[in-house]
Image (cartoon, rainbow, N blue to C red; front, side, top):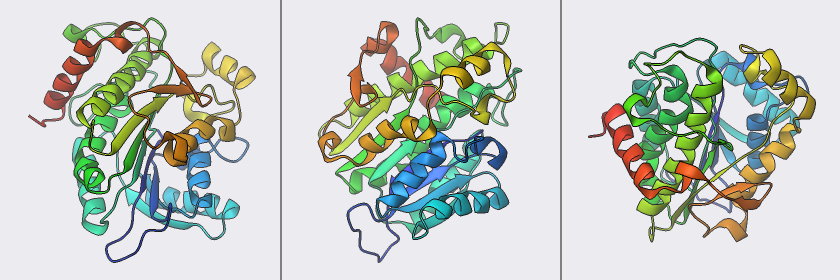
Length: 303
Protein backbone atom coordinates (compact mmCIF):
# COMPACT_ATOMS: atom_id res chain seq x y z
CA UNK A 1 0.00 0.00 0.00
CA UNK A 2 1.31 3.41 -0.87
CA UNK A 3 0.04 6.89 -1.45
CA UNK A 4 0.63 10.57 -1.13
CA UNK A 5 -0.92 13.16 1.07
CA UNK A 6 0.84 16.29 -0.02
CA UNK A 7 0.52 19.71 1.43
CA UNK A 8 2.14 23.07 1.27
CA UNK A 9 2.75 23.87 4.88
CA UNK A 10 5.03 25.67 7.29
CA UNK A 11 5.95 24.97 10.86
CA UNK A 12 4.71 27.56 13.31
CA UNK A 13 6.96 30.57 13.25
CA UNK A 14 8.42 29.91 9.81
CA UNK A 15 7.72 32.08 6.79
CA UNK A 16 6.31 30.54 3.63
CA UNK A 17 8.02 31.23 0.31
CA UNK A 18 6.22 30.27 -2.87
CA UNK A 19 6.00 26.49 -2.34
CA UNK A 20 8.11 26.32 0.77
CA UNK A 21 6.61 24.06 3.34
CA UNK A 22 4.80 21.92 0.80
CA UNK A 23 4.21 18.70 2.60
CA UNK A 24 4.00 15.61 0.53
CA UNK A 25 3.19 12.30 2.13
CA UNK A 26 3.84 8.80 0.90
CA UNK A 27 2.10 5.99 2.70
CA UNK A 28 2.99 2.36 2.78
CA UNK A 29 5.76 -0.19 2.56
CA UNK A 30 8.94 0.75 0.78
CA UNK A 31 8.90 -2.47 -1.18
CA UNK A 32 5.71 -1.46 -2.93
CA UNK A 33 6.51 2.23 -3.10
CA UNK A 34 9.44 1.82 -5.46
CA UNK A 35 9.17 0.46 -8.96
CA UNK A 36 11.96 -1.27 -10.83
CA UNK A 37 13.19 1.89 -12.47
CA UNK A 38 13.79 3.62 -9.17
CA UNK A 39 10.62 5.52 -8.22
CA UNK A 40 6.89 5.10 -8.51
CA UNK A 41 4.61 7.93 -9.60
CA UNK A 42 3.89 8.86 -5.98
CA UNK A 43 7.58 9.14 -5.25
CA UNK A 44 7.98 11.09 -8.51
CA UNK A 45 5.38 13.53 -7.18
CA UNK A 46 7.39 13.90 -3.97
CA UNK A 47 10.50 14.62 -5.98
CA UNK A 48 8.67 17.12 -8.18
CA UNK A 49 7.34 19.01 -5.17
CA UNK A 50 10.76 19.00 -3.51
CA UNK A 51 12.24 20.52 -6.65
CA UNK A 52 9.82 23.42 -6.25
CA UNK A 53 11.53 24.40 -2.98
CA UNK A 54 8.87 22.51 -1.03
CA UNK A 55 9.16 21.03 2.43
CA UNK A 56 7.95 17.48 1.94
CA UNK A 57 6.45 15.39 4.76
CA UNK A 58 6.12 11.72 3.88
CA UNK A 59 3.25 9.71 5.38
CA UNK A 60 4.59 6.23 6.12
CA UNK A 61 3.46 3.16 8.04
CA UNK A 62 7.02 2.16 8.86
CA UNK A 63 9.64 4.68 9.99
CA UNK A 64 12.60 2.65 8.67
CA UNK A 65 11.05 2.41 5.23
CA UNK A 66 10.19 6.08 5.49
CA UNK A 67 13.86 6.89 6.01
CA UNK A 68 14.63 4.99 2.81
CA UNK A 69 11.99 7.09 1.06
CA UNK A 70 13.77 10.24 2.26
CA UNK A 71 17.04 8.92 0.85
CA UNK A 72 15.34 8.23 -2.49
CA UNK A 73 14.09 11.82 -2.73
CA UNK A 74 17.39 13.35 -1.57
CA UNK A 75 19.27 11.27 -4.13
CA UNK A 76 17.48 13.31 -6.79
CA UNK A 77 16.99 16.56 -4.87
CA UNK A 78 19.93 16.91 -2.44
CA UNK A 79 18.61 20.18 -1.02
CA UNK A 80 15.13 18.74 -0.33
CA UNK A 81 13.42 19.72 2.93
CA UNK A 82 11.73 16.58 4.20
CA UNK A 83 9.68 15.31 7.13
CA UNK A 84 8.17 11.95 8.13
CA UNK A 85 4.67 11.43 9.49
CA UNK A 86 3.71 7.88 10.45
CA UNK A 87 0.17 6.90 9.52
CA UNK A 88 -1.77 3.78 8.58
CA UNK A 89 -4.42 4.92 6.12
CA UNK A 90 -6.41 1.74 6.72
CA UNK A 91 -7.03 2.85 10.32
CA UNK A 92 -9.31 5.77 11.12
CA UNK A 93 -7.68 6.19 14.53
CA UNK A 94 -4.26 6.43 12.89
CA UNK A 95 -5.52 9.00 10.37
CA UNK A 96 -6.97 11.16 13.13
CA UNK A 97 -3.80 10.83 15.19
CA UNK A 98 -1.52 11.75 12.26
CA UNK A 99 -3.76 14.68 11.33
CA UNK A 100 -3.66 15.93 14.91
CA UNK A 101 0.13 15.75 15.00
CA UNK A 102 0.34 17.63 11.72
CA UNK A 103 -2.06 20.33 12.88
CA UNK A 104 -0.17 20.73 16.14
CA UNK A 105 3.12 21.44 14.38
CA UNK A 106 2.06 23.38 11.29
CA UNK A 107 0.24 26.67 10.88
CA UNK A 108 -0.36 26.49 7.12
CA UNK A 109 -1.61 23.92 4.65
CA UNK A 110 -1.71 25.16 1.09
CA UNK A 111 -1.86 21.99 -1.00
CA UNK A 112 -3.16 18.55 -0.04
CA UNK A 113 -2.63 15.67 -2.47
CA UNK A 114 -4.28 12.32 -1.77
CA UNK A 115 -2.95 9.34 -3.72
CA UNK A 116 -3.14 6.23 -1.53
CA UNK A 117 -4.01 3.00 -3.27
CA UNK A 118 -4.20 -0.76 -2.80
CA UNK A 119 -5.14 -3.76 -4.89
CA UNK A 120 -6.22 -6.43 -2.41
CA UNK A 121 -6.41 -9.96 -3.78
CA UNK A 122 -8.76 -11.32 -1.10
CA UNK A 123 -11.52 -9.64 0.88
CA UNK A 124 -10.19 -8.21 4.16
CA UNK A 125 -11.67 -6.06 6.90
CA UNK A 126 -9.78 -3.28 8.66
CA UNK A 127 -9.67 -2.71 12.41
CA UNK A 128 -12.72 -0.47 11.89
CA UNK A 129 -14.66 -3.30 10.25
CA UNK A 130 -14.48 -1.66 6.82
CA UNK A 131 -13.57 -3.58 3.65
CA UNK A 132 -9.88 -2.77 3.13
CA UNK A 133 -10.03 -1.63 -0.49
CA UNK A 134 -12.89 0.77 0.24
CA UNK A 135 -11.26 1.97 3.46
CA UNK A 136 -7.84 2.72 2.00
CA UNK A 137 -8.71 3.75 -1.53
CA UNK A 138 -11.59 6.02 -0.63
CA UNK A 139 -12.48 6.56 3.04
CA UNK A 140 -8.88 7.53 3.85
CA UNK A 141 -9.18 10.38 1.32
CA UNK A 142 -12.46 11.50 2.85
CA UNK A 143 -11.35 11.38 6.47
CA UNK A 144 -7.84 12.81 6.05
CA UNK A 145 -9.12 15.71 3.98
CA UNK A 146 -11.90 16.53 6.42
CA UNK A 147 -9.51 16.37 9.39
CA UNK A 148 -7.21 18.87 7.67
CA UNK A 149 -9.97 21.01 6.18
CA UNK A 150 -10.00 23.72 8.88
CA UNK A 151 -6.33 24.44 8.26
CA UNK A 152 -6.85 24.41 4.49
CA UNK A 153 -9.59 27.00 4.90
CA UNK A 154 -7.37 29.14 7.12
CA UNK A 155 -4.56 28.90 4.55
CA UNK A 156 -6.65 29.89 1.50
CA UNK A 157 -5.93 30.11 -1.34
CA UNK A 158 -5.31 26.38 -1.06
CA UNK A 159 -5.72 23.25 -3.17
CA UNK A 160 -6.82 19.63 -2.80
CA UNK A 161 -5.71 17.18 -5.49
CA UNK A 162 -7.19 13.68 -5.44
CA UNK A 163 -5.59 11.05 -7.65
CA UNK A 164 -8.32 8.76 -8.98
CA UNK A 165 -8.87 6.94 -12.27
CA UNK A 166 -11.30 6.48 -15.09
CA UNK A 167 -13.98 4.14 -13.77
CA UNK A 168 -15.77 2.88 -16.90
CA UNK A 169 -19.40 1.92 -16.33
CA UNK A 170 -18.97 1.39 -12.60
CA UNK A 171 -21.83 2.39 -10.31
CA UNK A 172 -22.19 2.61 -6.55
CA UNK A 173 -24.78 0.37 -4.90
CA UNK A 174 -25.70 2.06 -1.63
CA UNK A 175 -27.38 -1.12 -0.44
CA UNK A 176 -23.97 -2.80 -0.49
CA UNK A 177 -21.50 0.09 -0.73
CA UNK A 178 -18.48 -1.96 0.39
CA UNK A 179 -19.57 -5.05 -1.59
CA UNK A 180 -19.61 -7.12 1.57
CA UNK A 181 -22.61 -9.12 0.37
CA UNK A 182 -21.12 -10.12 -2.99
CA UNK A 183 -18.21 -12.37 -3.98
CA UNK A 184 -15.02 -10.31 -3.79
CA UNK A 185 -13.03 -9.29 -6.85
CA UNK A 186 -10.46 -6.49 -6.86
CA UNK A 187 -11.44 -5.87 -10.50
CA UNK A 188 -14.90 -4.88 -9.22
CA UNK A 189 -14.07 -3.39 -5.82
CA UNK A 190 -11.29 -1.08 -7.01
CA UNK A 191 -13.13 0.80 -9.83
CA UNK A 192 -15.99 1.80 -7.51
CA UNK A 193 -13.46 3.45 -5.17
CA UNK A 194 -12.21 5.47 -8.13
CA UNK A 195 -15.75 6.64 -8.83
CA UNK A 196 -16.12 7.45 -5.14
CA UNK A 197 -12.99 9.62 -5.28
CA UNK A 198 -14.40 11.54 -8.22
CA UNK A 199 -17.75 12.09 -6.49
CA UNK A 200 -16.01 13.10 -3.26
CA UNK A 201 -13.91 15.66 -5.13
CA UNK A 202 -16.97 17.17 -6.78
CA UNK A 203 -18.94 17.40 -3.54
CA UNK A 204 -15.92 18.81 -1.72
CA UNK A 205 -15.53 21.50 -4.38
CA UNK A 206 -19.24 22.31 -4.05
CA UNK A 207 -19.02 22.62 -0.27
CA UNK A 208 -15.87 24.76 -0.52
CA UNK A 209 -17.27 27.12 -3.14
CA UNK A 210 -16.22 30.68 -2.35
CA UNK A 211 -13.77 29.62 0.38
CA UNK A 212 -10.62 30.02 -1.70
CA UNK A 213 -9.93 26.28 -1.49
CA UNK A 214 -10.21 24.37 -4.78
CA UNK A 215 -10.49 20.59 -5.29
CA UNK A 216 -9.77 18.60 -8.43
CA UNK A 217 -9.14 15.00 -9.42
CA UNK A 218 -7.19 13.27 -12.18
CA UNK A 219 -6.55 10.05 -14.05
CA UNK A 220 -2.77 9.41 -13.99
CA UNK A 221 -2.91 6.53 -16.45
CA UNK A 222 -1.20 3.16 -16.11
CA UNK A 223 2.32 3.11 -14.68
CA UNK A 224 4.57 0.34 -15.96
CA UNK A 225 6.42 -1.94 -13.52
CA UNK A 226 4.61 -0.62 -10.47
CA UNK A 227 4.77 -3.01 -7.53
CA UNK A 228 1.29 -1.97 -6.47
CA UNK A 229 0.00 -4.94 -8.51
CA UNK A 230 2.45 -7.51 -7.17
CA UNK A 231 -0.18 -9.13 -4.96
CA UNK A 232 -2.68 -9.55 -7.79
CA UNK A 233 -0.51 -10.14 -10.89
CA UNK A 234 -2.49 -11.66 -13.78
CA UNK A 235 -3.50 -10.07 -17.11
CA UNK A 236 -4.02 -6.57 -15.68
CA UNK A 237 -0.43 -6.41 -14.44
CA UNK A 238 0.81 -7.65 -17.82
CA UNK A 239 -1.18 -4.96 -19.64
CA UNK A 240 0.03 -2.31 -17.20
CA UNK A 241 3.68 -3.29 -17.56
CA UNK A 242 3.38 -3.43 -21.35
CA UNK A 243 1.51 -0.21 -22.03
CA UNK A 244 2.05 1.86 -18.89
CA UNK A 245 3.87 5.19 -18.80
CA UNK A 246 6.82 6.33 -16.72
CA UNK A 247 6.31 7.52 -13.12
CA UNK A 248 7.31 11.03 -14.14
CA UNK A 249 4.60 11.16 -16.82
CA UNK A 250 2.01 9.89 -14.34
CA UNK A 251 3.02 12.56 -11.81
CA UNK A 252 2.94 15.44 -14.31
CA UNK A 253 -0.77 16.29 -14.01
CA UNK A 254 -0.65 15.89 -10.22
CA UNK A 255 2.13 18.48 -10.02
CA UNK A 256 0.36 20.74 -12.52
CA UNK A 257 -2.83 20.78 -10.45
CA UNK A 258 -0.86 21.24 -7.23
CA UNK A 259 1.42 24.05 -8.33
CA UNK A 260 0.56 25.73 -11.64
CA UNK A 261 -0.79 29.30 -11.53
CA UNK A 262 -3.33 28.48 -14.25
CA UNK A 263 -4.99 25.81 -12.07
CA UNK A 264 -5.25 27.92 -8.92
CA UNK A 265 -8.95 28.73 -9.37
CA UNK A 266 -10.20 25.64 -11.25
CA UNK A 267 -12.36 23.42 -9.06
CA UNK A 268 -14.58 20.33 -9.20
CA UNK A 269 -13.02 18.99 -12.41
CA UNK A 270 -11.30 15.80 -13.57
CA UNK A 271 -8.19 15.82 -15.75
CA UNK A 272 -5.95 13.52 -17.74
CA UNK A 273 -2.68 14.70 -19.30
CA UNK A 274 -3.56 18.28 -18.24
CA UNK A 275 -6.85 18.18 -20.17
CA UNK A 276 -10.30 18.17 -18.60
CA UNK A 277 -12.20 14.92 -19.12
CA UNK A 278 -15.84 13.97 -18.58
CA UNK A 279 -17.21 12.03 -15.62
CA UNK A 280 -19.98 9.88 -17.14
CA UNK A 281 -22.79 8.01 -15.44
CA UNK A 282 -23.02 8.47 -11.67
CA UNK A 283 -19.92 10.67 -11.91
CA UNK A 284 -22.23 13.49 -13.01
CA UNK A 285 -25.06 12.79 -10.58
CA UNK A 286 -25.36 15.46 -7.88
CA UNK A 287 -27.70 13.35 -5.76
CA UNK A 288 -25.29 10.39 -5.76
CA UNK A 289 -22.33 12.50 -4.70
CA UNK A 290 -24.37 14.06 -1.87
CA UNK A 291 -25.52 10.66 -0.62
CA UNK A 292 -21.98 9.27 -0.79
CA UNK A 293 -20.80 12.14 1.41
CA UNK A 294 -23.53 11.39 3.95
CA UNK A 295 -22.73 7.67 3.99
CA UNK A 296 -19.02 8.47 4.34
CA UNK A 297 -19.72 10.65 7.36
CA UNK A 298 -21.47 7.70 9.01
CA UNK A 299 -18.68 5.23 8.18
CA UNK A 300 -16.04 7.59 9.60
CA UNK A 301 -18.14 8.53 12.62
CA UNK A 302 -18.20 12.20 11.68
CA UNK A 303 -21.92 12.42 12.47
